[in-house]
Length: 360
Image 1 (spheres, one colour):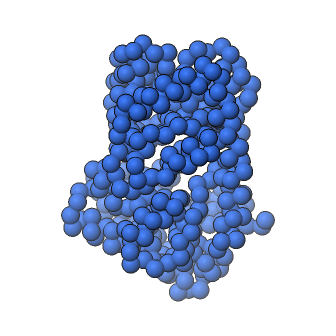
Image 2 (cartoon, helix red, strand yellow):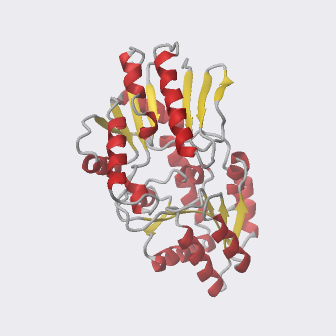
Image 3 (tube, one colour):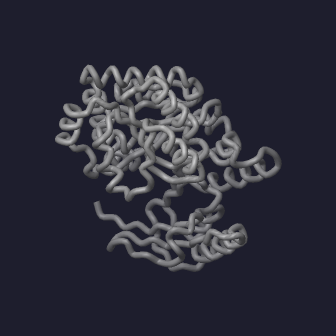
């Protein structure tokens, strides 16, 4: 398939810096960066104005497909400009995060007039697109209730990943034979909404009952200090820091179980994307998720792991004990293999793209 991609990045994290970056012959990134300092909001507004003018005046080619990702508000008006200029044949918005309701429910944004304004802006930004892609049926139902006035076509676009090398059978066979410890891994942002408190409590219970279970945490974020301090006092908890993606994916081969924990008692149904990395490494998934999501049902329906409600620490402990028993009975490889096969058959990026182009 012949293709070329232009990426316009509103770099709120400030990691890229502003400028044009040619990644390959067919891939160019235009970055509008916002430095992290006390004037961040003002600089963010100025970066948005520069980006908006760029869309108005740049000599663009006609795009067969314009794709946006949540949060949509950063690109308010942009798709409308491209349509007005006759440069966007079709447009698709990938909705992974329901903003701002999720941020309100986990305490990142206060309720009130600010929330209502942010919801209005986000809704207007989403309405620019021809089609909205959501991760699951529960996401689709929530979208219909939360954004009642948005009348655009909605489809399911599952999370995806590249078929890069992750799974190493030799490492896993060696590890299974030689290691009597259940090695659990959590990789991702160490921030609100990621189950950091539950992870620490779970590790504390492992230490209390002297279990041969090790929980390793990769990542960074505002709550990193809590994990680091807890790991110093608890040999069952390890903080592995931040590593490059290739090193992280390779390290997953040394673990038995991939851990996913979300915030309990929220209305927004999540569908954690980190499951892709676990599937690629053939790791069984231990998921503690909110009642509103269908993610847990998905994991169990394909036989790739165990799911419980994230608000029930006793149930999570019971699921961890179940994983320990499954390892002792040599059943983890079969469970992880089901996730690995499901990924290759359904979630590999070329498969998802082929299905998406048919649906569009």
